[in-house]
Amino acid sequence: MPNKTLDMSGYDCPMPILKTKQALSTMNSKEIIEVICTDQGSKKDFAAFCNQLGHKLISQRDEGNKIIFNIEKN
Image 1 (cartoon, rainbow, N blue to C red):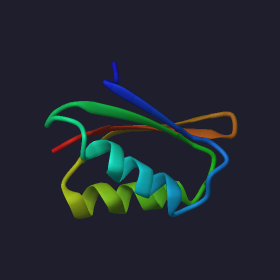
Image 2: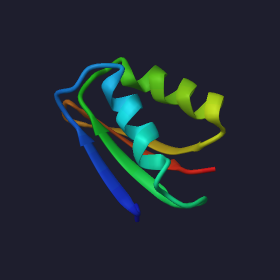
Image 3: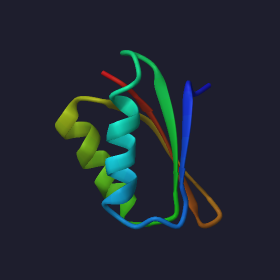
């Protein structure tokens, strides 16, 4: 169960990453943010984002035209 949900449907890169980074900065370690995107490029972007900053990409799933990410803050 996520602590916060961020709906970035309709936004293209880099906005979903920037807004996620901003939201994570207000969260505590081990809290989970759910990010909803429609930009298919966000799949590789969020994997790289988590690798670079040390956050854990818990899950990534497709639901119709949406991609839903669950990320645990480091």
